[in-house]
Image (cartoon, rainbow over all chains, first blue to last red; front, side):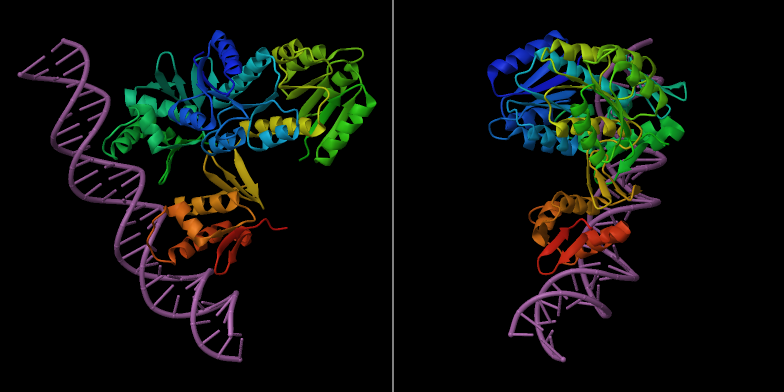
Length: 226
Length: 226
DNA sequence: ACCCTTTGTGAAGAACTTGTAAAATGAAGT
DNA sequence: ACTTCATTTTACAAGTTCTTCACAAAGGGT
């Protein structure tokens, strides 16, 4: 498990405790002390789950949740000190996946986080160490790809692109996202490069290339065909 | 919504209260007062979700959860009066999907139930966070729009306009606001451009185009029709 | 009711975005 | 240095989307 968790909590002690628990459970942990920092970390990292306190300096948890939900459906667990249960309702409306009231047992929070991560894996078609969708299988440890149970050989770039798209099945990935994911943060290069690779990838996928949809002026999206 | 919910709770008053809330929310409700009855009802009905109290006569909640999980992965929410948090951990281990401690706000329980049911839907369908009003649904991560549950395809500009209007349901959006939102701050161009796109968008929305009202000399407004 | 302003409409071409093919460049191994 | 393969660039094609324009229709103020 190398899932990176982002803990957004302004109180140092609480954050440290949580961090310890998650590190011990084998996750990697990123931290943010206020709303602005949180969004920055969110944008610059590939995260698996977010733990979000509501009472924060600069931007409150609601706002952050709303902003994140515009571009991602990453699991979010919200924390609150208040016992006011209307908060919980608002939290769910804004798209939080779970809601834990303080004081909480860190082990419970950990259990809830694990459950969400597990759900997500299942939803994305990750079974053990492969990822499957629409007749395409990616075996992650061996870095091989099968289409209709026949292995096809992809270059590094093609593999990375396909993996990223399939990890985010059903979600639009912008060209920028693809570029930063595959080439790194400040890649300067021709705009057509990405198209070339996409074409090569699609050719290799044969019939199944229809899984990768072009979203004009935005990016690409992997969709399971029905 | 015709999802049948099974409420397993021995205290009549609590069960009745819950039942009312769920009935009002449009669900159908089945009841069980003890463990044996619960299993019987479970086996004889096609359920969508189970709410399961732990302290029960005859068979306790743990046992029931374990038994059900042998044959089904129906969403289960466990209830407990105890504040002992180890219970929660055990609950998750046994495969419960959520865990609520008494006393609870019935609305919160309802919200959590809805979330689980919604997740279930998603597994078999479209992904993600969405925005709905008046028969129009925008699935934000997948960037798709449904009118009466049928997907329509919008261009970038049309999508941005609709999203902005629906995000501000009931509020008048000025032409300037629309322009800066969709085209950016210093857009110089023909005044009629916006009308053209609005026309195309309305055409694609069909009957539902009435949701977008023209406010003469000001802008546009999205309104849910009743 | 009138005039003036604002918005809706249809069609055409401009502008943009992506797809495609082929050539140039770069990297790795022999 | 040569071969091979992946990557990037280039130039162009194809298709879509956007913008503009002229005119029609509708709305607002007096």
